[in-house]
Image 1 (tube, helix red, strand yellow):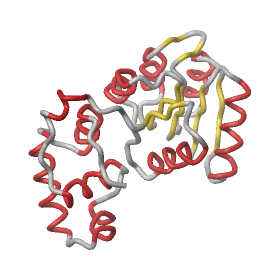
Image 2 (cartoon, rainbow, N blue to C red; image 1 turned 60 degrees about the horizontal axis):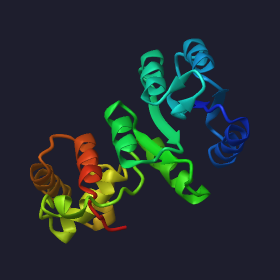
Image 3 (cartoon, rainbow, N blue to C red; image 1 turned 180 degrees about the horizontal axis):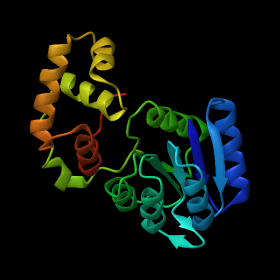
Length: 205
């Protein structure tokens, strides 16, 4: 899988590149230190499949860098790696099309788990704080089993994988997902992940 890592901090970029190279040797890693270089890499490699991008580039701040690279590499999955991990920033990045958000404060284990989730087709979000009484009033009333199904969905697990992990039939998993979507007021897996983050739901490990 051809992957582009975009960060203006050379030391951090090289460190992350080393970790990625050791952990996922099959990934072909490209690098860029600013948005202009990243655009050039996207244009030179139209087969890019994964983009890891910082939101604090010298020639693009905030979501502008993510939006620009999504335009240049529309078929790639984009993951934000940023020091700004405020809940509003995380949610804005996902709503702008990112499939993951990895805080730079994450330790190696968390970062590895996050990239594993994305590489398996999931959407990764860091743990966000609960929204106090307002979110408590919006709890969807899911059963413990449905919360377990939702937890695996958030990790990017397929229906078949959820069925195996929880020892449930495929039809039962489908039924649980139907209830989950209805209670959260969503129509897709991506929308369910966003709802979990917005509500600050505490899901089982």
